[in-house]
Image 1 (cartoon, rainbow, N blue to C red):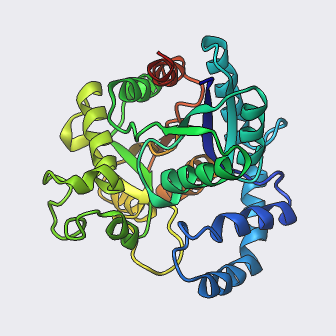
Image 2: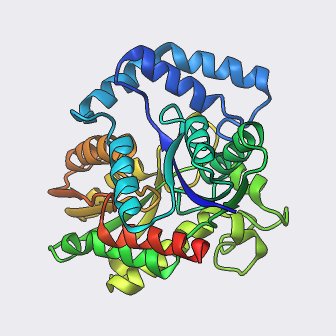
Image 3: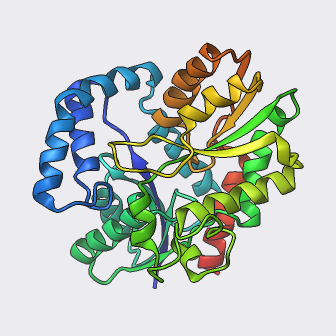
Length: 336
């Protein structure tokens, strides 16, 4: 067997133009693991969203676009290159939506004789709308384009020592400054996604302490894994209990999503006297629209309007050497 590595991140429009953003949003939102309703209902809902959202999102993407392209894609490419310098096995990068596509990455690996692949979803936590959909799509594409290709999936690494060490190291300089509060803002998901991913069918969101109560459900519980990341981070970084909290961002639609909501929390914390705010987004390994524009721009504006004084967004790990080391260690275990 010839081994290789496949890194998969979420994806981005090819450009910040309305047509490219519409194409990206259509692919993303029509994924049945993102909007998990029957196809006819999903098609109708997405059609309604695509009336106005592409123009709004294109404006937001335009604010963060770099000369080289989408920050998420460009950073992922840099991570890919840095990891390839440390690992001799072939490595390819793909996006779940748009480009570089999963199809192109699988073809490249197969063309290099690879038939045993370690898939590393660039999502530290398990969620059906990120980790799961990436895994399933890679499996589907490989079965079609390279039927003999074996796919081994790197499990969620939300509290592994390597990941936590990289996350803390990437934030260390910011934690040295004077701050009143550290907000851990995770990407939100609908509450129903937790229930759907609960293999026991009777644990997630059934009590206020479900995430603290040991259960097999935690292997696929996004909320419990976010809490575990936070607990490991503050322990290693020495953040006092009274100086941090957790929230969830980027909700879509009117159904209940994981709470508390980040935009509400930023206003509440400012009004309660937390004037110097740090925000970190550990669900994202690479900076993107949700971290740069949603948190760094709109979140900052909300906080300052609510009487906040200083707002600092801690960048994602991006190309931090310890994050590359964490990825390298995952690959070396597979290649051994």
